[in-house]
Image (cartoon, rainbow, N blue to C red):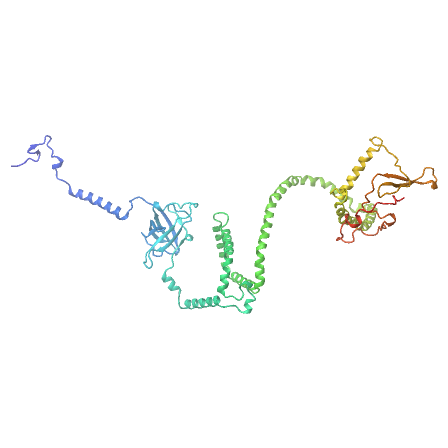
Length: 526
């Protein structure tokens, strides 16, 4: 029995077409699709990377690739954060540039990042890139950016160490170690002791180094400050310094003869400094105070600069007036030039002659006057003024007249008091004048009584002069300062100097000769 291909279950399709499920399948196309899907899955499984998408890439320049090859890992603190994509020669140098791809867990990478090539396992022979991403304050490296060779390093290989230690080098190393041991374990001689610091005399090199440790913190602190200063005040200062140093070194290298002379002179200078350790030590000890004083002086100059700038600014109006001043002074200068010209000079000398003669006489008199003025100034400075600054102690039993004020102030206080007292007796005040009286024969001044004031007479005849007595209700306390009498007064000596030397002391107003004396029983001198 034959089946009609155009029928369904023995029945014909209504439109005459065969259904898709009954049509023959294309197995070759199906196999190609399966293979493509399998290839994509295997690629993603082994490479762990999505094709046609590029990650974050950076470049780093190393002095040597050091067995780094593509697919070597890049690590941060032991964690894989990327891989090496390519290793090639850097321009026309012996260095290598390594291109790396960094995953998201290794970002960001800053411009001060540090990279090192390190062995994964000792003697294993494969290496990885150790990445330190830098400080957050530094800017980030752009995608495809390059980190310079100054921020990369490579490890020293064992073969390099063995190659460096050749026979001659090993001998030199042995000599070095032997000399180092001798220096650390040998005590100095007497001559060597005389040239070293007293603190380390008689000690070996090792013992001296141990004693040096107590000074190390201060020295290292100063070294750290100096190193910090070398970094400069702004980012890039150190790079500019290195660039300038490179230019200087290159200029020195162009003239080898001059460079050789410089090295020779520098060697002689160092030898001269080392020939006198004591003087060198003293110079170094004084270097700190010198730098401190220099810093203070520069600070003073720096503080004065604003004032100088302000002074310069204030001078601008005067500088602007200079042309007008010169223009106004030019006619005067012309007249002065004509006055001092040959035709007028004789008349000038004629009129200047008497003036010159008088000036010379004045100068001669000043020669005699100035020493006297100097003596007077010294007398005021060393005697009068210090004496007037003293306070007079005027106290006794039952009284205290001390004011605690300087003597020169008490003098002015007395003048004010006299002026006020005179106002009471000038005819306009509340007091009147009265003639004191008393018996002429009662002179018991110890307990009061009468005191002779003066000798008076009213008739004009000398023989009729009689004493005038004053009544004292209380006994006098005494005289202060002590009264020695008119006949015992010191002689006046005008030629004696007030101050014989600057070491003279002022007059002591409270000395023994100035104490209170007994009451005067003879009355006031006539």
